[in-house]
Structures are given as structure tokens and as C-alpha cells.
Image (cartoon, rainbow, N blue to C red; front, side, top):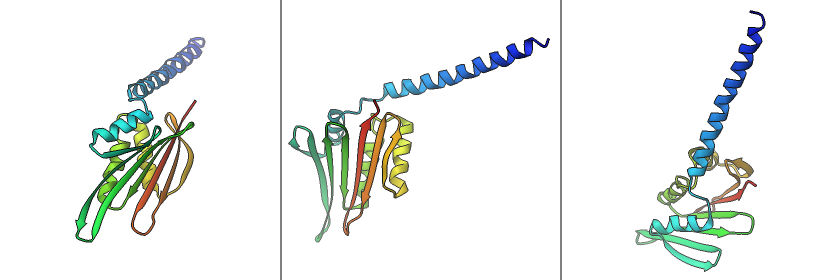
Length: 161
């Protein structure tokens, strides 16, 4: 009987870690089911939303929309998608709280798994500058500026290698 206890403890350890392995496999499957996070897919995402687009150069596209709030106020949003050699940067220039919907649409896009989306929303809601934070498959920098009549949010995604 004394010899069976170590065997049971060892079996519990092995089967318990099997659960951890299964959880890791499920997490990997969720990541692999996400749409690849590429410049082309991000541009396609914003084009599908029917935002007006201007290709500045091969690796930089600007999207924009706007509307008159009243006779004196034009509310608008600029979204800049830039692909550098090391990262993909998305900048939102917002002049109205309503335009924050484009940030939400981006963070809920199919190229992020739910755990990544939750952490990215946490960044936006933290009101802090964040540098080099590991979020899922990426290293992310997040910056926020609030000049007098706008809000600027910048996400920089560097893939983990």
C-alpha cells in the first residue's frame, strides 16, 4: 500500500499536467484560427468598413471619414496603417468620441484572439503609455496624446519571434 501512494501522486501530476497541455493546445488552436495580422489584412479590414482610403506609398495607407457636427464643427477620424520593417503601426486621430468606434472595431477584428483583444482594451482604458508589453503573439507599444481638439492613439505591434 505504501508503494501505491507515490504512483498515485505521480499519476495525478502527469494527468494534471495533461490538462495544462490540453489548455495550451486549445490556446494555440485559437491563435491559429485568428486571421493573420498583416498589413494587407488590416488594410482590407478598414476598406471593408467602407472608409475612404489613400495609399501614401506601398507600405502606408490612410483611411478617413468625417461629418459636420454643426455649421462650424467638422468631426473626423484619420487612421494610418504603416508597415515598417520591424512592426505594424496603427494610428488613430480622433476629433469626436463617436469616432472611438473605429478603435473598438479594430481591436475586435478577427486577427486578434479574445485574450489579445481583452489586453489591448485594457491598454486603451489604462490611460498609460505602454512600451514593449507582451500580448499574445506580439510586443506592443501604446501611446496616447490629447491635444486641444483631438485624441491620438498609436498601437505598434512587433511579432514575437
